[in-house]
Image (tube, rainbow, N blue to C red; front, side):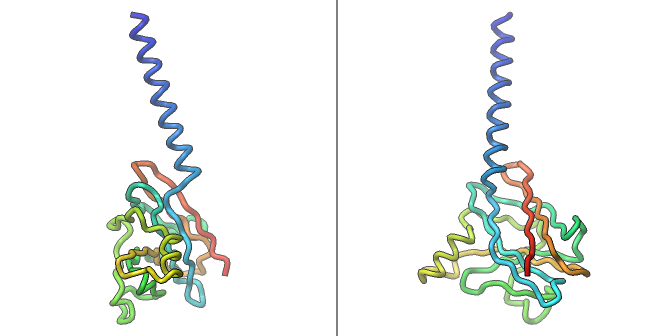
Length: 166
């Protein structure tokens, strides 16, 4: 009987150690990488370029601005390294039509879309339309100073905070 209890206790300890180690690793090496920051002149519309440098897909779950306020509108902009992003106040405008916008809960951020790797390809001339890039387009009725991104990675909820220092 004591042997069974010892095995159960040791198994639980190993599970807790593995789960804790995984969480610590993910917190110290987040898979979401941000790089591009751009805004319109009054900073009511911003775009945060980002990608996935991890091993599995990322799903954005929530976006907030400034003091965790809900933005007026936000979308994921999916483009390619040759086309780039558009800063817009209207996702349905004629200028925005060549770009693909989707709701944050409908987008899957694929692995291998690290902005750093894409930038290296652009710099050495090997970038192509196959190099997918993602941008978070956010609109608010006030100046946006901070964008808070909550996302899920392998079932773990992680957070990224992007300060806009223009």
